[in-house]
Image 1: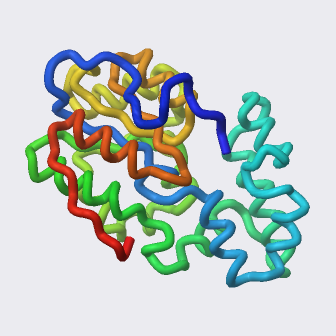
Image 2 (image 1 turned 90 degrees about the vertical axis):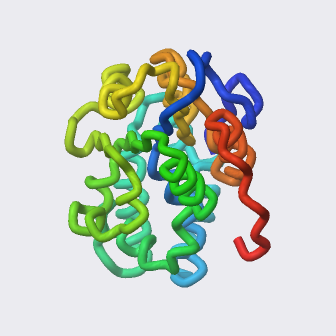
Length: 240
């Protein structure tokens, strides 16, 4: 798991210029649960994957050397998942690239991979008349355009800026400028959510109010976004 940013996870980074009028979201790790979590869920159904995860020392853990290289910016996230896909596929007797692995992840029940609290935040932001956008590095690359087009929750977005199509990946400053331009708002009026600390830092430098979403407990970050956007809290749902 990546290290926490310099502020508590429930705090926003960046300064808002007036009321926030837009919400910009990462997809993997914010709208969809991270592959780190989904690998474990799939391993419950594919026991042959378990020895691989054990040998790695736990996906994205302190003992996962390849993930530590990602954190040191020596390996990209795309390269990380490509290697893990090959390893998991071999374990189950198949040949997987990243898209094949993601297809297996997303064959799990929707409640396993879709973050309900984030979708509720999206729906409430739209109902309040706020601009809603996505800024993602890999959605089309990982899933394919046909899968993306079928997802009803993605239709809530006014705009989707996908580095799979633009060629500009976070944390490149140009990616954040593209997200701001697509929403059509001043950066200071945008709340940005992402699970990776360097993307939170990049959005903050771009002038947005940036909130880190931890993989294991996204609730406080979603609550912070609601407060920043002046959206009322949702009542607790014991079934989530």
